[in-house]
Image (cartoon, rainbow, N blue to C red; front, side):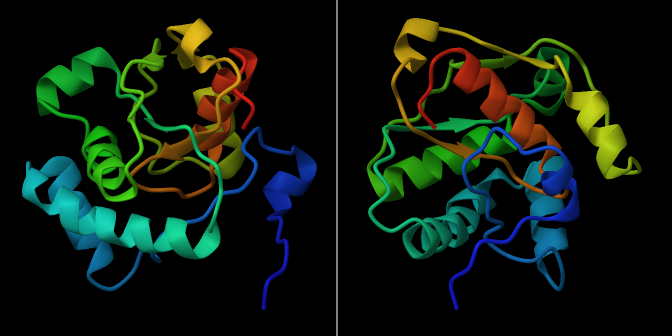
Length: 172
C-alpha cells in the first residue's frame, strides 16, 4: 500500500525535505552494526550497510532524478577525533552503487551540536538550528539531492541540512 504519511512533528512544522525514509528499522542487529561503524572504526561495514540504502532508494524512489548525493557533515573536531564521517562513507558506497556523484563539500557543520541521544524531537530541532552552512552554492543551485545520514530518529538533522541546501538553491 502506497500512501503519504506525516508524523505528528512534521504536521506541526513541515520539514524542508521532500520525502524521508529509513532503510531499516533500528532494532535487532542493526543498532550494533551501525554503532560499530559509527563509533568502533568498523568502516569496512559501510559498503554492506549501503546495500540497505540502495534497496531503499530503488524501492521508495524509483526513477527519481537525483543529480548528486549529499551527506550530513560532522563538526570538524569530531571528524578529526573519529578520523572519518560514517555518513560520508555510506554516501560514497551508495554513490558507487547508484552511479551518482557525491557532493562531498556542499555542506559543512558550523556548530558543534553534541549528541542528541537523550533529546526530545523538539529539543533536537532546536539543537540543529543554524548548525549547518552551504558551500559551493553555485554548484548546489538547481540540483536535486539524495541526502544521507547514518540514523534518522526524528528527522531534525535531515530537515535542517535539507533547508540549508534549499536556501542555497537546491530544487529538492
